[in-house]
Image 1 (cartoon, helix red, strand yellow):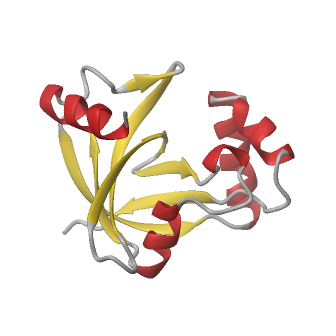
Image 2 (cartoon, one colour):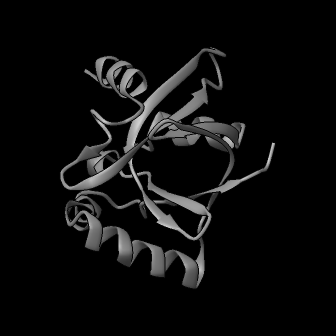
Length: 133
């Protein structure tokens, strides 16, 4: 299903597949840290100024999503928002910034709060900042 979602999103510039559960969706590219394979995953996001914010929830699993582990190994990547492709650098939000963005993310998609109750790990809030490349 993910591959179909990505294909339809790319073909329509996000007109189809650009929203899920009432929230905006981007396509995040990442390279497998062990395989070296390029992959793309659709994720809910919220804009924060020029930055894009995504949540590494994996549905409340005890394991981190593979895309976040891959971005930790290589934080420079690209995303597609609608028909626009952007080069970004990923980093984990900390402290006050994390709390502010987590609150906004839960307001956008309340299931994030439920996901946090399913796991002992603190779900990372990831900021994708434009690199201008």
